[in-house]
Image (cartoon, rainbow, N blue to C red):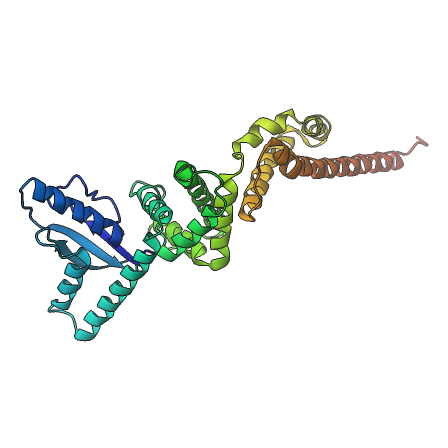
Length: 337
């Protein structure tokens, strides 16, 4: 959850500079407000205040507005509003004033890094979009900084030109975590939740991410995916591998002859799932699949080799069992008759 977040309300006061679907950083919106003030001054106009919600540690703290006359920052206006709030105790006021002041200072320090600022804003625009499915991914500023640091050190060319590819890698890592969580729910947790399944899935994913070791896996996948060929390349490569073609023949000719086509089909269907699982596991560990040769040597060939040995062993066992059954059959026949 974000430590400090500003979300504007659709109250009829419209500014082209403000997107009411965004979760603004305080330092970001301060810059936008200053631009609005300059424009209003140049146009010799005044404007009504604009309502917004202030979230602290993921929870809505207060609904208030920002005034454009004068030069007082949104932060100062917000702190003044809290100070003058009649329904809160002095202790509670001081608590939130101190938290907002501390969070704002930390945010300013982080946002002073221009590339991080661009990364954080683009992340919010993309991953925190309300239309993001199955749900928006909202990270704390510290988590976002940790993710940025992991990615930034691995960027060899211009950062800004690579930003969209970085976001695509983050999105894929997020969807992979969602897929794992969905599988766990389907396999063993369908009766464990109350209420909305989507909310349960979101809580499960966020709980997973908040574990430090898992967040490192999320970082690893993002960084490795950025420099890897896509998983879809597996689908193009494995059918052409001679070892795989030989395995196919064993499964659909020799094995199917003994156990039937249906069971042979299920064995073959599991191969692609193994390829994909191993690709995913490698990226979660931080290993990049940089080209087709790496996909073949690290993902495809080892799995095909192991499965070929397993099918050979199974066929030998079936052949042996069939031979023993034949011997028993002859032993049961009374040849004296």
